Length: 143
Length: 474
Image 1 (cartoon, rainbow over the protein chains, first blue to last red):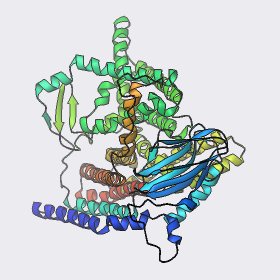
Image 2: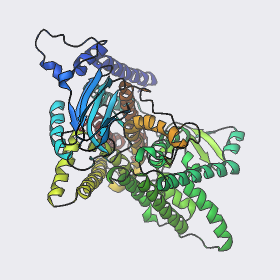
Image 3: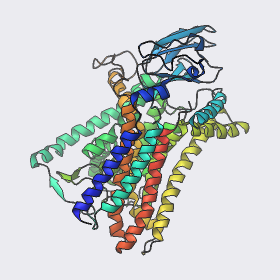
Image 4: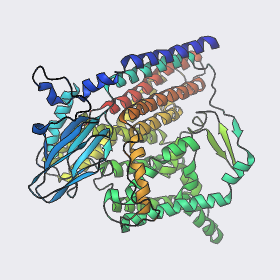
């Protein structure tokens, strides 16, 4: 194979890869619509807007999950920029800690406490009972 | 499909949650990566295949990397960098950091993320030295605290008694290093107390004792070359760097030309299987599929009446061992296949002959899996350096610094991860191609052997991509 043929083959390989990348990559709008909407919103009645406008924080008052040692560790899924809301409870005096965001709230024994903040960092973060060192949930923030 | 997996994992986790202190031994990891999206997984796999076939078609017909030319750096630069005073300083820095780890771990607060020892050992040292080695060469060889102490003591002992070290047995090869890395992986991934500051400090002391024993028996330099796990590990990665040191000269070599010079000894293939297997296990065991498996196996041990901690540690230990053995078996299968194309070499000879091609793959695994941990948890070194014991000190004025998690977004990490995997794949193919031309003098055999090698590389690479796309189980 001549040097020119090699370079041509190499270049066409690169071109195919780039083209495939551009073709496969969802535009940011699709991505947000596809992955960002929390599962709960899929059950909303017809006529509801498909997704909230980005500047209005998603209020999900009645959907606030309760995280506690006895329950399953739940994953709270949000899209970056949304407001995270959840409640938590501990049998002993403890502190609820959201890693990465470094949000903490005192949790006196048996009392249900709530936390809410804006999800502005992407990734998966542990939510734990700080003193017990126990994971009670996970916050998943998608781009 | 993914939703179902997540659901299954979630259901099984309900049970896991009842165990004291959840499955992961990582108190250090506050943030984990989002799995790469499906489309990127598909693209990555396609890119690997395209790259493979293009590479097979365009790669050179005569070996080009086996013998390498060096372009020396200016004499002055080499002289300064290899001077006795610089060696002394670097050695002293290494020893000081080793002592800092032991003292903080033993005397400091026993909380993982408030004590210098765990973050320093698992992040700054174990992960931080990876890019340093790949970019700048064998820096750890110069900083290695055990080597520095060994040389210092060795020199004085030599003056008193003129005893020669024992000859290093040929069969021992890289086995001590492989065992050392496996032990480190157990500490990091298996033991529940593995990231407690006191455990880290004690493990450091124990490892130091073993290292000094090895040096006393077989000589400082020989043990650092073959037996000292971290020296061998970072030395292997440093072969990917373009900088090479020969005596007192530092030179630039062609990209990848340092790797073929790695002489495979007994234990080499196992060493690489441990490197790839331990990262794979870490990825697998935190994904959905892995967690439900952990749950099942752990449940079986619990039914035998074992304590929660024992059964969880045995489960993880077995998982790590099985993963390493599977990696080994898969590579061996490829080599057994390559043997069928002809030639005089046994499977073992082929396995050792191509072992160096796994070095870029091992790097790709580590880089893709840990890049975000290094970039985020690595920032914690600043506050921890100022307050290593968790006593409220502020030695360097950086105690109040916090980790900026906004540094890079999830998408950037996805592209970095997939990029590392593809680059590692291509580098491995190039190395395998070059070696095949030497091992198989008949060009047709060389070509046919490469289909087997390609199979091995595609297998490892697909596994890496799959691990990155694993939905988190919790």
